[in-house]
Image (cartoon, rainbow, N blue to C red; front, side, top):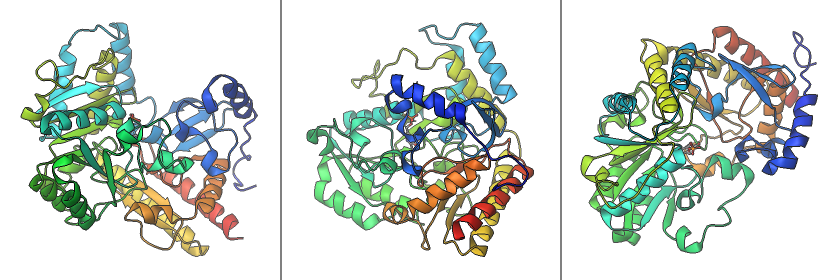
Length: 446
Ligand code: PLP
């Protein structure tokens, strides 16, 4: 028994539900990142209820949640302020197909926090937001190609599903089937944190490059900071080439502070806030746990979008009152003083505990932490780009993942994904997690 304080978790109902799900839902899951394929296979855990930092599975086992639904659940599950906003929205009708005042209020809040956004547009997912920024950049520049960075994931639209980080990497799919070469040829991939490679690509494809797209702080091959000067070089090289800069802030916006990576004057990279992208894609946290995406940027670029301009983008569900209400409530809660310092403090404690446990048991572990989020890489080298993130021990991670799950600690089932702290986690949760990790490391070392 790994944990003397509790019964080992068993999940017969999850196993049965998985068998049933396989009959009806492709692969039994509605997003491949939820499958356990990369951590030894078998039934994923079927959750049925969440509250605060915990969720309970179909067998009523409780887990401390570090998955946070791949990022959006920064306030924990069923946060009362967000729940009340969603209930209120539902009672008034969830969809009108007309503009509402709520959308203006939310757009104002987001613009105040991220001043590079002169105009925004709400959509339904991060994928849609990114996909549209590319269309708008192409419309504005009259060019076709984009440059992206290896291992950065920008959603599942055709153009960006190339060398695309956590989800596809985990499953070992380099490029998705079903994407014509004619489209894949429009994307050039260069290593993250490598301004020379970007410069060479821009020199080669010059006038064809509509935009350079980047996760300014990477969240899709672990949490990876840009090296000092990298984003400045990226922006100046792109602009000298007449290309736009698109920041994909789907993970990073409202993650580290009340704002985005582009307004983050955090300790690690004081220069981050010195530069502004032309276009920004948003999602995850800004929906408070309901589906959402948004994109925005400089006025003259955004005015390419219909009905003002020739770039078409629309959505039946876009800006629906339920998602917008949840988003407003979420940002209101995040605006409370001390919220992000608390996330930072809890994650620092977790980082220290994990590092000490690994060290004591002779396990090579690199931890990348950026305020309330961290990633664990089983390797003895730093992780600053995708090659380094790939060059880590996936089997060790799979063992660790399963040993933690057995003890009621839920991580994402992929060595590339981050752990996200929520405002609902307590010091006791962190302590329990550190102790569980120590037992896991002991088993792994034996
Ligand atoms: N961009 C980034 C940086 C992401 O991490 C993700 C999702 O993980 C997306 C875009 C796509 O967002 P969605 O899953 O909401 O379509």
